[in-house]
Image (tube, rainbow, N blue to C red; front, side, top):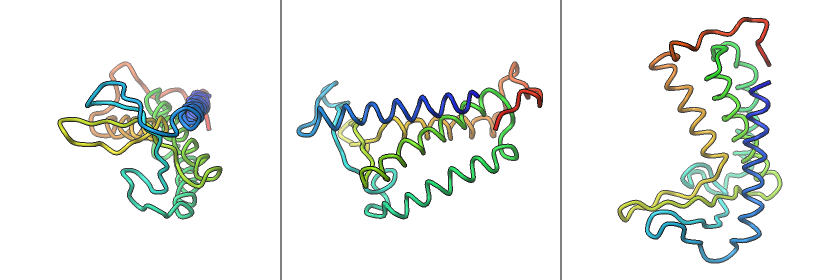
Length: 160
């Protein structure tokens, strides 16, 4: 149930923020912290950091494949712990959020725009952040193990 709740919350938050951005930021960026952070409406037809630009249809297919793989192999790749449930929910919600944009708009709405020491980090969104945090949590637990208090949950509380 946690996986579904986190996935739904991430996808809903992602879509809500994108609706606001499309309605309120169609023009110039809104500076939040001068020289560091602004909100800027970007139509991204590619993947992360603008890679694979213009391949929206291919990325739609890849999104469906990734969703299927995560669902199909969740039990063999993930340990049934709170951390892995959270990571799975974040990844699924992020994929669904961006997939919704790709299917509905033909591009992904990005808007979180950071600059640091004269360098520009490509704009991203809530879904992108959720995917990165989910993957990061998963990788962290693979390299460093689970928190000592976090044990495998009993099979009776397992969820699909």
